[in-house]
Image: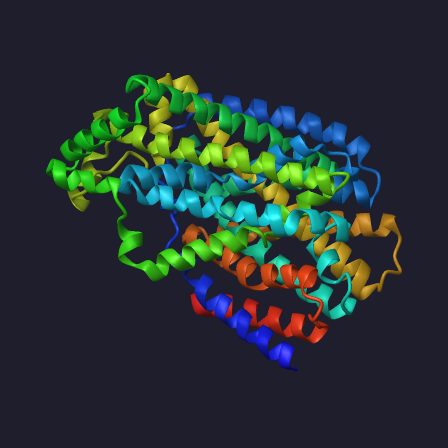
Length: 498
């Protein structure tokens, strides 16, 4: 009981620290429907056609539960690392952080660091043991030496809560982004995303999902690299020149003095509220190591060595990506904020602030237009859509495994099930999750995306991560302690935010 009491206190403290993330996160904001972007639609159609062809190929390789959940363990460490990067680098990161740098400067780098610092924890604490102990997902690890039914039930439910919040956020973000980038109706956009993610997962399982994530990662990194290269070329490949010129342009576009504009190079709103900054950092750092769709990827490689390699590769690509978003944000200050083509003068007259056409989250998209023209802007718009598809496919597969492998096969059927029936239940669960995501995505159209992502990271930080780490490293952990602690973390994380 003493261990249980300590565990409950530990979870409550973690929840209190992590629960502030929703109030400190960048948001996609309300989108304004734009004119139909045919370049983007054509490029996205090509991407969808190619990935559906891959799904058809993957469907022939997916014949059992191991293939469906883990691609048969046949993914290499490098491929898995690139897929993890594709799963983790979201549209909110690409558009949201670059927009935050565009608006506030240095604060955007703090968000980038927050998303990055969780990966050393994954590398040194989680990856190797996770691969050695587990079979398909998070629940396999936390229930390895404890009483299976209650622990697996808790792990499955907390995973589903994370998946649900994250999935709703991605669907709402998808609808808003597609309305903004492609000029399509919000409801149509949500249904398109839902149908595509359902096709990828039901027919192609983890193999198709992996390749969608790899292709998306390559497209996103290529596009962001080109944008950053063009920005650096314009300033003579000198960060000093970029920062000085950005301060000058920021001063002119915001009608403020040079000294006032130079404040974008220092900490802003986050430093003014250190509790928000601390809770943001804690939730992003520990939440990353508790995200079920990320952890599930470590079971797609053959051994612990390849799992470690996956994290190293993913960390490299993710770190590189977040550095690019920082350059893109300052590039937007240089090329977008003083270009009348991208400014919403009518809205600025009402708000009294610099406003971009379509909202400030369009900063990266407008920069792509400025440095590469309509064709490249169409490519970046298609990349933003592909980014969402890759993330929701991973989330859906993770949620389906929690329902079919944990709740159906091991809790309700107590392990007395056939691989064929479990695979059938996985596909039924995928269908149900896709319908659930589409309905809630439409109902929650006005919901703050950052708030939903904040809930997901908070639950992952406060419920999943402590149970996972303690189950792997603390011999004194009991079933009762794990269950009570997990419930405390789950309930307090949700309650303190709502």
